[in-house]
Image (cartoon, rainbow, N blue to C red; front, side, top):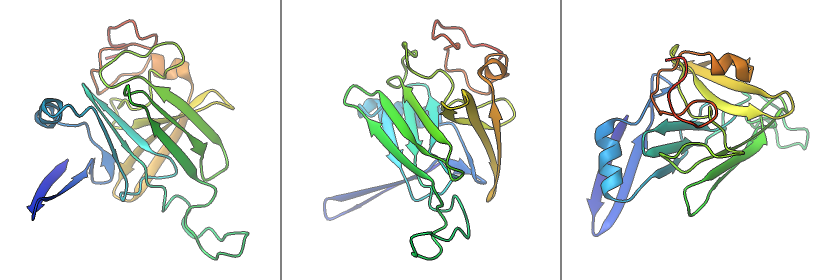
Length: 195
Protein backbone atom coordinates (compact mmCIF):
# COMPACT_ATOMS: atom_id res chain seq x y z
CA UNK A 1 0.00 0.00 0.00
CA UNK A 2 1.36 3.38 -0.89
CA UNK A 3 -0.35 6.48 0.40
CA UNK A 4 0.71 10.05 -0.22
CA UNK A 5 -0.85 13.39 0.58
CA UNK A 6 -0.04 16.60 -1.27
CA UNK A 7 -1.12 20.04 -0.06
CA UNK A 8 -1.00 23.09 -2.28
CA UNK A 9 -2.91 26.35 -1.89
CA UNK A 10 -5.49 24.71 0.40
CA UNK A 11 -6.16 21.95 -2.14
CA UNK A 12 -5.82 18.36 -0.99
CA UNK A 13 -5.04 15.38 -3.16
CA UNK A 14 -4.85 11.85 -1.78
CA UNK A 15 -3.41 9.02 -3.84
CA UNK A 16 -3.55 5.42 -2.70
CA UNK A 17 -2.79 2.13 -4.34
CA UNK A 18 -4.01 -1.04 -2.66
CA UNK A 19 -1.95 -3.52 -4.69
CA UNK A 20 1.48 -5.10 -4.57
CA UNK A 21 2.75 -6.72 -7.78
CA UNK A 22 -0.81 -6.56 -9.10
CA UNK A 23 -2.46 -8.37 -6.17
CA UNK A 24 -4.65 -6.62 -3.60
CA UNK A 25 -3.16 -6.17 -0.14
CA UNK A 26 -4.83 -5.66 3.25
CA UNK A 27 -4.94 -2.13 4.62
CA UNK A 28 -2.14 -1.84 7.23
CA UNK A 29 -3.29 -1.30 10.83
CA UNK A 30 -1.56 2.11 10.96
CA UNK A 31 -3.60 3.30 7.94
CA UNK A 32 -6.78 1.83 9.43
CA UNK A 33 -6.13 3.78 12.64
CA UNK A 34 -5.39 7.00 10.73
CA UNK A 35 -8.61 6.69 8.72
CA UNK A 36 -10.62 5.79 11.85
CA UNK A 37 -9.42 8.95 13.60
CA UNK A 38 -10.82 10.91 10.64
CA UNK A 39 -14.10 8.95 10.74
CA UNK A 40 -13.39 7.23 7.40
CA UNK A 41 -14.52 3.61 7.07
CA UNK A 42 -15.04 3.26 3.29
CA UNK A 43 -12.55 4.05 0.55
CA UNK A 44 -13.49 3.88 -3.14
CA UNK A 45 -10.92 4.20 -5.89
CA UNK A 46 -10.25 3.50 -9.52
CA UNK A 47 -7.44 3.96 -12.04
CA UNK A 48 -5.85 0.63 -11.13
CA UNK A 49 -7.21 -2.08 -13.45
CA UNK A 50 -7.81 -5.49 -11.90
CA UNK A 51 -9.79 -7.83 -14.12
CA UNK A 52 -13.45 -7.63 -14.95
CA UNK A 53 -15.00 -6.71 -11.60
CA UNK A 54 -14.14 -4.57 -8.57
CA UNK A 55 -11.78 -5.71 -5.83
CA UNK A 56 -13.10 -5.41 -2.29
CA UNK A 57 -10.61 -5.40 0.59
CA UNK A 58 -12.07 -5.89 4.07
CA UNK A 59 -9.48 -4.85 6.65
CA UNK A 60 -10.79 -4.46 10.18
CA UNK A 61 -12.79 -1.25 10.41
CA UNK A 62 -11.97 -0.18 6.83
CA UNK A 63 -13.34 -1.42 3.53
CA UNK A 64 -11.71 -0.54 0.21
CA UNK A 65 -13.48 -0.98 -3.12
CA UNK A 66 -11.32 -0.38 -6.16
CA UNK A 67 -13.30 -0.53 -9.39
CA UNK A 68 -11.46 -0.27 -12.69
CA UNK A 69 -12.39 -2.77 -15.40
CA UNK A 70 -10.77 -0.86 -18.26
CA UNK A 71 -8.51 -3.77 -19.24
CA UNK A 72 -10.88 -6.66 -18.60
CA UNK A 73 -11.04 -7.99 -22.17
CA UNK A 74 -7.90 -6.91 -24.03
CA UNK A 75 -8.48 -6.69 -27.78
CA UNK A 76 -12.29 -6.86 -27.54
CA UNK A 77 -13.89 -5.26 -30.60
CA UNK A 78 -17.20 -3.54 -29.97
CA UNK A 79 -20.16 -4.83 -31.98
CA UNK A 80 -21.49 -1.27 -32.03
CA UNK A 81 -18.58 -0.15 -34.18
CA UNK A 82 -16.56 1.65 -31.50
CA UNK A 83 -13.49 -0.39 -32.37
CA UNK A 84 -11.30 -1.95 -29.72
CA UNK A 85 -12.49 -1.13 -26.21
CA UNK A 86 -10.60 -3.60 -23.94
CA UNK A 87 -13.61 -3.85 -21.64
CA UNK A 88 -15.88 -6.35 -23.37
CA UNK A 89 -19.19 -6.82 -21.60
CA UNK A 90 -17.71 -5.96 -18.18
CA UNK A 91 -19.61 -3.29 -16.29
CA UNK A 92 -20.08 -2.70 -12.57
CA UNK A 93 -22.08 -0.35 -10.40
CA UNK A 94 -20.79 0.26 -6.88
CA UNK A 95 -23.25 1.72 -4.38
CA UNK A 96 -22.03 2.86 -0.94
CA UNK A 97 -24.82 3.87 1.41
CA UNK A 98 -24.67 6.49 4.14
CA UNK A 99 -24.72 3.83 6.88
CA UNK A 100 -21.65 2.13 5.33
CA UNK A 101 -23.39 -0.81 3.65
CA UNK A 102 -22.42 -1.39 0.01
CA UNK A 103 -23.87 -3.16 -3.00
CA UNK A 104 -22.04 -4.11 -6.18
CA UNK A 105 -23.67 -5.56 -9.28
CA UNK A 106 -22.92 -5.90 -12.96
CA UNK A 107 -21.52 -8.27 -15.58
CA UNK A 108 -18.15 -9.89 -16.07
CA UNK A 109 -16.35 -9.83 -19.43
CA UNK A 110 -17.88 -13.23 -20.33
CA UNK A 111 -21.41 -11.91 -19.64
CA UNK A 112 -21.86 -13.66 -16.27
CA UNK A 113 -23.86 -11.63 -13.77
CA UNK A 114 -22.39 -10.72 -10.38
CA UNK A 115 -24.17 -9.21 -7.40
CA UNK A 116 -23.48 -8.94 -3.69
CA UNK A 117 -24.27 -6.81 -0.66
CA UNK A 118 -21.73 -5.99 2.04
CA UNK A 119 -22.19 -4.97 5.67
CA UNK A 120 -20.82 -1.69 6.97
CA UNK A 121 -17.05 -1.97 7.57
CA UNK A 122 -16.16 -3.73 10.79
CA UNK A 123 -19.66 -5.20 11.16
CA UNK A 124 -20.64 -8.87 10.79
CA UNK A 125 -22.78 -9.74 7.77
CA UNK A 126 -26.53 -9.62 8.39
CA UNK A 127 -29.11 -11.61 6.44
CA UNK A 128 -28.63 -11.00 2.71
CA UNK A 129 -25.09 -9.63 3.15
CA UNK A 130 -22.11 -11.53 1.84
CA UNK A 131 -19.66 -13.16 4.27
CA UNK A 132 -16.88 -13.87 1.74
CA UNK A 133 -16.43 -11.06 -0.83
CA UNK A 134 -13.48 -8.91 0.18
CA UNK A 135 -11.67 -11.59 2.14
CA UNK A 136 -8.27 -13.01 1.28
CA UNK A 137 -7.60 -16.74 1.16
CA UNK A 138 -4.40 -18.22 2.57
CA UNK A 139 -3.07 -18.75 -0.99
CA UNK A 140 -3.15 -14.96 -1.54
CA UNK A 141 -6.23 -14.91 -3.75
CA UNK A 142 -9.18 -12.65 -3.00
CA UNK A 143 -12.89 -13.41 -3.15
CA UNK A 144 -14.06 -10.86 -5.72
CA UNK A 145 -17.72 -11.57 -6.47
CA UNK A 146 -20.76 -13.76 -6.00
CA UNK A 147 -22.16 -15.10 -9.27
CA UNK A 148 -25.88 -15.52 -8.54
CA UNK A 149 -26.68 -17.58 -11.65
CA UNK A 150 -24.43 -20.43 -10.46
CA UNK A 151 -24.13 -19.64 -6.75
CA UNK A 152 -20.34 -19.71 -7.13
CA UNK A 153 -17.77 -17.15 -6.07
CA UNK A 154 -15.11 -15.64 -8.30
CA UNK A 155 -11.66 -15.67 -6.71
CA UNK A 156 -8.58 -13.99 -8.14
CA UNK A 157 -4.86 -13.79 -7.50
CA UNK A 158 -2.67 -11.45 -9.48
CA UNK A 159 1.00 -11.49 -10.24
CA UNK A 160 1.97 -8.44 -12.20
CA UNK A 161 -0.60 -8.16 -14.96
CA UNK A 162 -1.42 -11.87 -14.93
CA UNK A 163 -4.70 -12.68 -13.16
CA UNK A 164 -5.52 -16.24 -12.13
CA UNK A 165 -9.21 -16.66 -11.46
CA UNK A 166 -11.32 -19.56 -10.22
CA UNK A 167 -14.99 -20.15 -9.54
CA UNK A 168 -15.56 -21.76 -6.17
CA UNK A 169 -18.59 -23.16 -4.39
CA UNK A 170 -19.65 -21.62 -1.06
CA UNK A 171 -18.89 -24.95 0.66
CA UNK A 172 -15.28 -24.69 -0.57
CA UNK A 173 -14.98 -21.22 0.94
CA UNK A 174 -16.62 -22.28 4.20
CA UNK A 175 -13.86 -24.88 4.61
CA UNK A 176 -11.04 -22.68 3.23
CA UNK A 177 -7.98 -21.41 5.05
CA UNK A 178 -8.08 -17.62 5.26
CA UNK A 179 -5.25 -15.09 5.33
CA UNK A 180 -7.45 -12.45 6.96
CA UNK A 181 -8.87 -12.34 10.45
CA UNK A 182 -12.09 -10.41 10.08
CA UNK A 183 -13.61 -12.36 12.95
CA UNK A 184 -16.73 -13.45 11.08
CA UNK A 185 -17.59 -16.91 9.88
CA UNK A 186 -19.94 -17.75 7.02
CA UNK A 187 -23.06 -17.03 9.04
CA UNK A 188 -21.67 -13.86 10.64
CA UNK A 189 -21.83 -15.32 14.15
CA UNK A 190 -18.15 -14.68 14.84
CA UNK A 191 -15.11 -16.92 14.98
CA UNK A 192 -12.99 -17.27 11.87
CA UNK A 193 -13.53 -20.49 9.96
CA UNK A 194 -10.68 -22.43 8.51
CA UNK A 195 -7.89 -20.26 9.72
